[in-house]
Image (cartoon, rainbow, N blue to C red; front, side, top):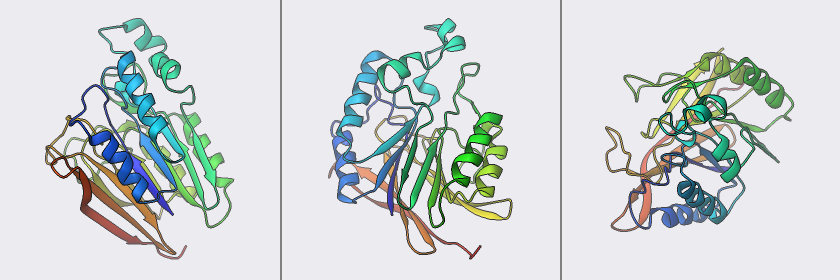
Length: 265
């Protein structure tokens, strides 16, 4: 099983001329079974940015899910009324009304959750209803299924960030994911690619944080770096490869990877 984890393209702040098409081609070459896009498709939720995001999604060669990020909401200074009452109105009109999509296929179950909310600048939150959704969705999946949770805001502090911007209530969501056999949690938001194995409720979870795929909104220590994460599974192994873009050669190549062997449950 191969999955492409893409995040934070931020249309409206594209880093280089060909990075979008080169990203799509690299995903295509690797024969991924599905694509997970974890938010911030736009920079300021403008109509033109959503149009560019739609064109990008239409060009993807494979089934995908997409969840919104905080930059996909109406800005406070532009429409404060919508920011409070219907922050994702333009996202729903221009992109998709499905805010918490799923993929179910042989050997794969993916659940996307919306961690954005209007009463914050950039933070996220997880609700009690979402915890129940995780429990019900993943508990219904058959044995030998790769279970993946996709969100925009990271749920747990990791070594990559000294001042993490986490989704409020994320610890409850992680606990529910661990209880129901989730293997991978995919997130973005930090613009810094990172992979780490975490322990929750006695279970091992691989957390995949994807960097910004196509924008120039880089962050230390990965300045001038666009990337995406390739997730591959074997019998009891899971490997995540961070693929870094070189605009001079117009190619993505391996930057860092982690291979994790899961203990027998």
